[in-house]
Image (tube, rainbow, N blue to C red):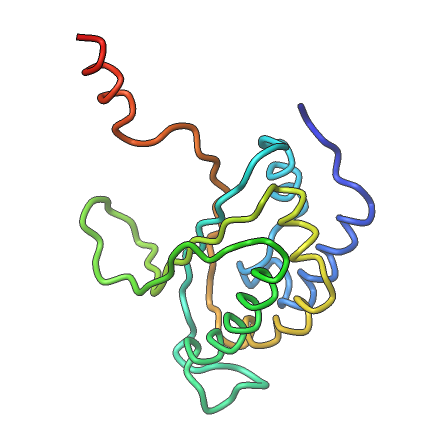
Length: 166
């Protein structure tokens, strides 16, 4: 089922995009990407895979910090906010090396956040607090890939089920 992008959601993300430095900064979603997110499953949790690349030196208002340190200010506020709204941080950590794959893109950190649903994700990040916190995100973040994922089955489940049929 395709859900249309409401005017309120579009306006919220346009404001958030402008606060984040616009689409040219590669750290904010395009309206088409939000629409694609909404075309995913309406029910059930969505895990957002955050692939993060930081600036060497943070911009204002975090001059004197590394990009990672500035983003850390954003991250601390965001994790507290989203968890108070029913989301949860599953895992976050540093990227050490690429074991399989070949790409010119590289990332410094990865974080997995689970939201109760796609609609809740949009509600939570559409709150005015997020725009307030995002000054540190924009100051420290060079690039982000944000990938919405849905659990379909547990890895190894098919093997376990096949073994039990014997």
